[in-house]
Length: 288
Ligand code: ATR
Image 1 (cartoon, rainbow, N blue to C red):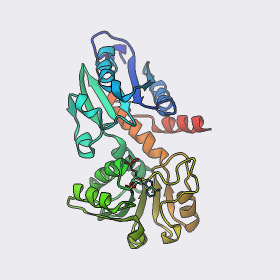
Image 2: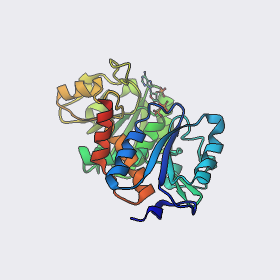
Image 3: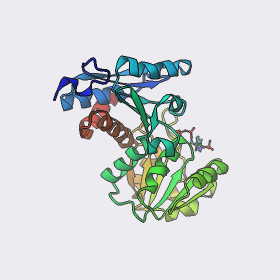
Image 4: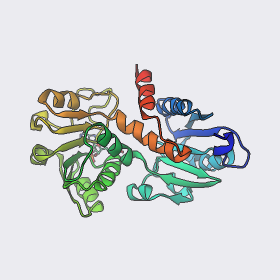
């Protein structure tokens, strides 16, 4: 492969990638993407970029000036970055947030790979066919929006969004209305929907370190054979997943979503298939 393949400003050189966030030091993206670049034999670097909100516009301009091929965008910039981009892919428009920017000779396009990354992980690890599935999504925030949007493409039978604040569940369900039935309910009224579901997905932060005891759901509502999925990857197995496994559910943790959102981004930047197993292992090694 030619070294100038990823040249975006006519100056040549290795591929430059990064992740913008505030804070950013904890991000596992650099470790994951550096391992991927190495495995693919692509010379370059993926660096953490600590960008405070007041300087986001300048940082986006710097992507063009410095000739970065692309960047990931994380908290708190995923929505705020949108006005500074030249184009928005359908994924970014439907979710209303951007986590990946691709630089084509100075023209910046925003994508959202979180939802499609999650669905690719769920399908490749546990549920190859989501067509006709009954799905309950716990939570109605930004993560839920991306996941519901991506799930709709798989034509499930229905999606029930259960949220602590019922209004937000109803609003998200309304915004996602399509050929698939999408309903919003209060989390405390989710018992029946959960017992009838094929797949239950936690998108809330309940159970995330350091609050390891938290569970978004009473596990006695679960049935053997159901798929229980948790977006949280710290810890790798939340208390919800441990309880679900004990009951006989099939469990799916959040690491895969993180790996596959990165895999899509890397594929947009390089045009090459992402080495997902190597990316996953890089994070596992880093988590010890
Ligand atoms: P994200 O982008 O990660 O989805 P968010 O937009 O802040 O973050 O949404 C967080 C979600 O977790 C919300 O659905 C929130 O419920 P509310 O809308 O009622 O705030 C949910 N959540 C957070 N803490 C929770 C808790 N202790 N119990 C139940 N749900 C909780």
